[in-house]
Length: 167
Image (cartoon, rainbow, N blue to C red):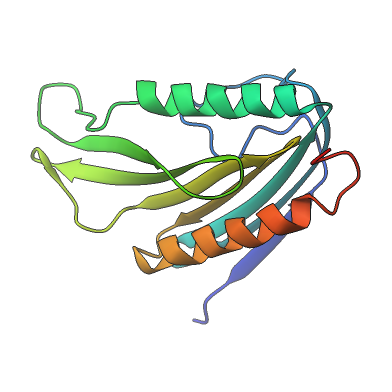
């Protein structure tokens, strides 16, 4: 059987952000004026995503970024399942040098209290001016981390070419 691939593209501003650590549901009301989401899924299982969100102002983009950073910090670094088995999923974020502000995130499964070596999910969330951009990768290991950071850096430069994004 050959590997299967799926691509989806959406321009819906009511879609949740690709990085959503608190699994927020409902229609977002955060000042978005335009949005494009491109998602790739493979049968491995693996996948990646790219999302560009334009806000009505720089302050709205900053507020959206701060909310994501706060949500990520509330998510446990090491989650445990009921019964104290030491299994679960945890998320670690650190600042990154992309755009005006950025956060690199790695999500790891834990088994019997120990973190698996390779992250299950990687992400970069950044904002530049009135734009927020998110790059995610699932199932491709540490090698994907450098790739999504580079993609985010390229988007940082492109975002300022858009009208009313960087001033």
